[in-house]
Every structure is written in structure tokens, then in C-alpha cells.
Length: 454
Image 1: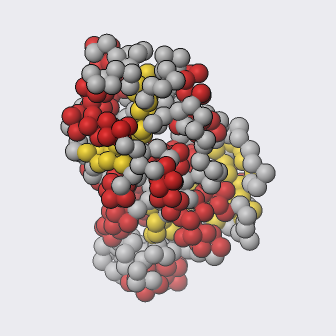
Image 2: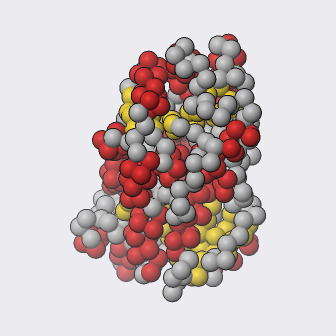
């Protein structure tokens, strides 16, 4: 049995966003066999009998690290909490945040450039320091393998340990709730939005509205569709992210303006201005007929793994998705939804109409979704936590007396005499590097490394 510290950087409350939902369920999958503490650095009000759930930051979090055998944390953990590198560290890379942030501000300029560069540096801290990594798909794994290789983590030590490199990075998709699918009780959605009639067809957007999505084309499609289906409704279930650090994005503001201009807001297009409680989302999805997710032809799309789509599968909803990501291709091939070209409002309208007219079997949808049950996807994480270990190149560098992860003496690898030290994008990076070294190798060696970093 391992003592596991799992982290969430989003609030662990009744209104959890995707990253918190993932942290919650990964921790639950470990809880039957291990002593698990799930710590929310942005707060925690939920609890569960199988594990300890608490809020923790600063010294309190450091104390939890000291008491753990292994840490499981989201990306950006090394910059936020460098003390975690003192323990075997599994980092969850299922969100390529630097690709999202290419669209996050919607304008090119020095500020945007600096924000993306900072995000890249934060991610590189993780990739240099983690002992084991998770990602959400084989396509994502290929992407992260390239990043790890460019930082010297694909090296003779990690290769000799496991030529497949599955012991360095493996796939744990976002999962599906193990609870039964919600019953087809349509009352919760209609109670929240009384304008929806008992038999009105409902199209649901199940998560947040962010700049890398394309809700505009969806709204135009619904405007087109209402000519033949005047009672159709489109509901956006989450307009305000539960993490107060994440403001409403540009595209959400533009979406509301478009709906007002077309005369759709409050009648055909409906907005939930908050966030649906996690434990109630099934009741809301049960009142819908089609789940949708539309996005731009963006590099983020290719490496994304849309968490809201997993909830659609759990609820037995047929889906209309923009093509380009992993899940849309799988769902279209299985015949339980449609994948349409980006930005094509006519194709979106036609696909929604087809799903309403001839919906695929709900049983077929939930059977397809069962392959993504949390209990079915978490084996790589379970295996690592059962035998927590340092990365093979970290072990090799310790044996050789190197101060950095990697294999000393190999040009270009971290920890090599021939390799340049990491470039600091700001003073915080220098400080985090010193703290990381201090946590791993002790104060004396960190003092010697401090000069090199400067």
C-alpha cells in the first residue's frame, strides 16, 4: 500500500470543472488499494469515505508531500510547488495548455507572446522533472514524446529501462462515471429553463465556452434549423467557470452578442450563467436530445480530448462534433454521432436534424462509452502507484553524481557537462530551479548549482 498525495488546482466543490473531475476520479480509482489524500489548492468542500479530501497550500501542502510515498498532480505542479520533486512524481499532461493559450487572448502582441512563452517554460519544468507522465490518447502521447525527446528525457537510461517508454509516459483517457446512466427524466432541464416545452427538442453544450471553441457556427446552425424546427432549443450549461481565476473569455462575450443580434437569446438559445453542480449534471443531460461540441481548425483541436463528450456518452446522448480530434473520429465511425467540418453551419444544422430525426440507440451509445469507464482506463496509473519509482534517467544521474535529471556525459541532455543550463524566462524560474534541486539533492548541492543557474 502506498501513501498517495493527489492534487487538484481547481476547487473540489459541488461545481467542479474538468481538471478537478479528473483529479477526483483518478484519486477514487487509487483509494481501494492505497491511503489517498486528495488536496485542493483552490479549496475543497467535498468529501468521500474512501479517501481524505482537504484544502492545502504552502507549508501545509509541503507537510503532505513529506508524508507521501508518491505524488500525482496536474501539469504546472513543479513551478507551483517544487517540493513535490522530493517524491516519485506522476504528472498528468492531459491538457496541452500551451496549445490552448495560443487562442486564449485572441490577439497577437507582446503580452500574449509572454504568456505563451511562460506557459511553455512551466510545462518544460514538468517534463524535465517528472518521473512518470499521463496523457489522454495515443495521439497526445506522440506529441508529448516529442517534447520529452527535445528535452533529453528520451535517452539511453529511459530506453534501456523500457524500449516502449511506457514506463515514462502512458495513456489514461478522461473517463466515464461508474454510476448508472441518468434516467430519461426530462424535468430538471425544463425546471431550470421554463421556456422549454415538454416535447421541445434540446441541443446541449455541456461545458465552458472558451476561445478555442466555435459556438458561433453552432448558433448560426440552430438559427438555420429553427426554420424547420421552430421549437428547437440550444442550452449552454456553463458560462461562468467555477475557478474565479478563470474569467469569461472573449468568445463567450461574442456569443451572447450574436444571440441578441439574431433574436435568439432567452427563447431559442438559453444560457446557464453559472456552472451545473457535478452531482446534478446527469439530471440536466437527461433532458437533452443531442450533445454538441464545435471547435476551430486549430492545433489544440488535434491533440485535445473533449471531456464534455464523455458525459454525453455516459448520458446516452447522440453527438454532433467538429471533426479533427480523437473522439470525434471514433464516435462517427461507431455510428453514434456525426463529425462535421469546422465552421460549416449548414453541415452542423443537417447533422443535428439527422440526430433528432433518427437518433442512434441509447444502448449502443452507452456500450461504446463503457470502454472509457474510469475503472477500465486507469491501469497505467494503478501500476505506477503500486510500485512508485524514480525515472530511470534520474536514477542514472544520481549514480553518476550529476545534479540534474538525465544521463551525464551525453551532449545536450539535462545534467550533462556539455548541456547549457535551462534558460530562465523570469526570476521565478530561477527560484523554482533552486528549490527543485534543494528538494532533490540537499541544500549543499543546491548552493553549488545556484551559481550555474545565475
